[in-house]
Image (cartoon, rainbow, N blue to C red):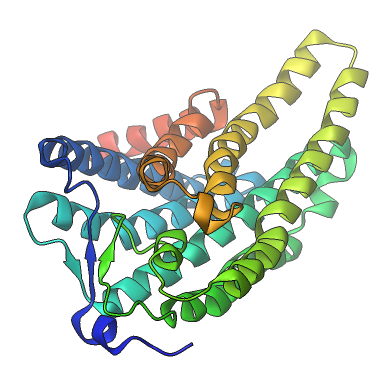
Length: 312
């Protein structure tokens, strides 16, 4: 597969929602609002995790990693989206498209593995409470987080160049608002069966394997919760895990549809709205999901705000 010189020199045109121009201004306001909420919510979680010693635990270490991931993910895709929604120029340079594709693939993979790591942390907290601090010691937490980040970027290092090397026979229009792998594969003018097979095999390790580990972890957690006799104990265990389960459900529902189906059955219109969902909505609601029912975070926020108010 050779590189298409036309695409390389002139870049691509992100069609996005240009066929519905009346929606673009509305989408610009919506996307910008959610982007600002994403930055505010996730930066707050990172700062609280650093500033409050009560949050120096494995759970909040992984949560800070997830918040950092969401900030990087949205910042790598939303500014270009806002630029294309704002005016008539829908172009993106070849380098910009390559960079966007690499980071979208990489950070999506990181989140899959990181959610599995967080499920293991919840398993240790609920099923092995007496040995929790010994099991999830700082060194292991750092190693598990490193595995998540390296897995995602390693997967992208394989798939992004292969996708970009597909010839497009001069065709520059990407029927999407992001340089995303399914859309770029769909516009290729050659048989992509081999690449799709490779993508599916890698997806088994990056998407399905972490999901299976999450389901196994929560199977053991469910058994442990059912053995708890007190209603207060069951409620505490449920609150410990419900936020993570909600995030897993929101993320995997969209990512499986996007990356575990053949390109010839991929619906561009559905793909666009699902991409909007996991690109702007999920990262913005993650901080809310993890904080609304979390007393530790609420108290840490009051403490930090109280100190800030006293200094002012």
